[in-house]
Image (cartoon, rainbow, N blue to C red):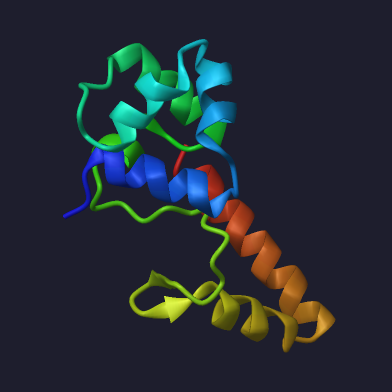
Length: 115
């Protein structure tokens, strides 16, 4: 099971961001941030909230590693049930215009249902 520090490292690497950049955003030293990622220092709740805002993910995602990360840039990583985002996009692109419109309507419907 992934820990918070592992998730933070993966997010940073997925976004191709340096530790210094995150440290500046958080107004802390690079060494302090490095200690967070290495698990050598406890991460304050306020920092978790700021990192969730920075990466545009929920704090639940950061604190509950069983949730899948919807913003991963790795199109070949498993997205859900072993299906990659590449496969999802490929299947979307093979739909005709009517099918794509119906899919977008359904996604909007599901999104509203989750609010």
